[in-house]
Each structure stands twice: as structure tokens, then as C-alpha cells.
Length: 107
Image (cartoon, rainbow, N blue to C red):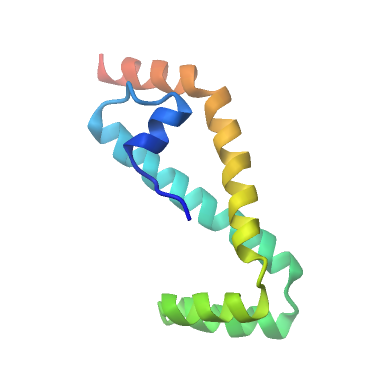
């Protein structure tokens, strides 16, 4: 699917970030993507489906949650791809500010 790594950051124009900041940025991207995809899918779920899916999430059953998504929302990978592209566009347009803020924090 996709990889959140240094190449990903380079693609976004963030390869100048210090290692510690890169790790924080990757974690932030992952959490933001997870939240946005979850919200987008939740908009399409009935209350019953939402309860079912939350059951997997609350038990930290990632395999079960993934299988449930594949069964109930076969388009979820497209939702992930769409949200990732939107997030990448946002980050790219702010890359200079992100790097400047990081340098300011370091100095």
C-alpha cells in the first residue's frame, strides 16, 4: 500500500528535518491519516456497523478490524489512498514552514 519512511518525507520536501523531528512527523502523519480515514468511513456506517467496528478497535484486534473493513467496506483502501493524497498535498504546501519551525526550535 504505502510506506511512512524517510522516502515519504523526502517526497513531501521534509528530508531536511532532524531525525527526531522526522520520527515525530511520521507518527503525526500516521495518526492524522488514521483519524481521517476513520471519520470518513464512520460517516458511511450505520450505528450497528459502528458498534461492531468499535468492538474490534476497543479490543485492539487489528486483524479483526481489517477483515471487517474488507468485508463491509471493500472500498476502504481507496478511502485511505484519497485521504493520504489530501494529507500529502497539505504537508507539501506547508513544508517550508514546517522546516523553518523545526530549525527555530533547534536553535
